[in-house]
Length: 432
Image 1 (cartoon, one colour):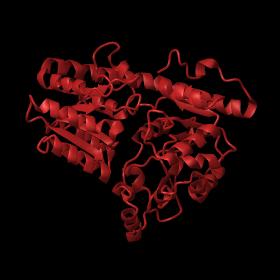
Image 2 (tube, helix red, strand yellow):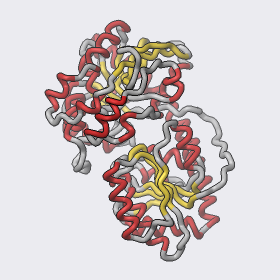
Image 3 (spheres, rainbow, N blue to C red):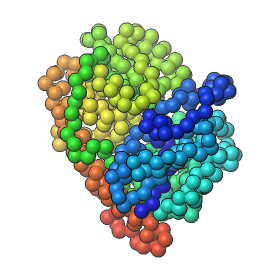
């Protein structure tokens, strides 16, 4: 089976195989002129969960995988290389971030160069199926619309056309809607996303998927590292949806009984949000309790850094389950979270997390104080969280094996009209 994967993935290993032009003063000058986040012009690890999928296919003799992604500052319009049996195709797209300032989706779509480059690459490969990993980044997700002559499956990492997402960029919503309306085959990992797609888009074939774990079935081994902070809240990009402000407000309550408590806010943060957070910290007199750590270029460095904290406070408001919660559990950090359809699953068998009601800052603070004061419970939650993640790794492997079978089913349905068995589709009664 020949598979094309369109994705926003990049990491240090990928960058070592690409050739880059000299840094452009014009490019960085335009970033400042248009007040774009500084990370736009930086080399950063993106979509680490996709690496798990790639590693899975490296071991498969029955699959030829082609990864298509975009990158800034490439020397050539298209750069290609092969690594451990996987083919990589990256195209230059330095100015896509500036085009996103265009308010009209139809005009923005016509100006995209990525679609033409992806079409050229895909037609040369002539794959059996095209996968899109996530629709929420228009810079690459729109390119899937340029290859209509292949069965296309979008693995939905989230759904932005969600009534709860009130501040989402209009371009993101319109591009996502275009992708979901056009593609027939969609994949989701939770019922919330299934329900949103069912309500908004009729006649879609919706499958269940999970990205495979990197170390299937392996025991989690915790490395010893000196602790510098009590709590960490980390994210690729902080926002109110990530509960960043709520974690600071909860810290102010905790500080009343624990004056030296610390919170490390690690990850990307726009200039406007940083200003808002600084004002909130000053208002609550937390200048000596909150420490900011900028976004790490390499994901591995970020995951090492979070282990410098004893606990994680991750009150995400929109995700079914945030990947940061799972990453913290895997690294032995007891987590405090808000209640969502996904986080409710954490404590079905035993307590793996402390869960506050949505938007209940007092509840967050209460759980944070519990972690600071109850050492025995901390060890129980830590052990249960690790056990939960080890079991999920096994479950994810089974789900992914099922998804690979779904690829062939989609191919047969697309070309021959072969019926898709009900047990291969997402079951809203059982799946979450």
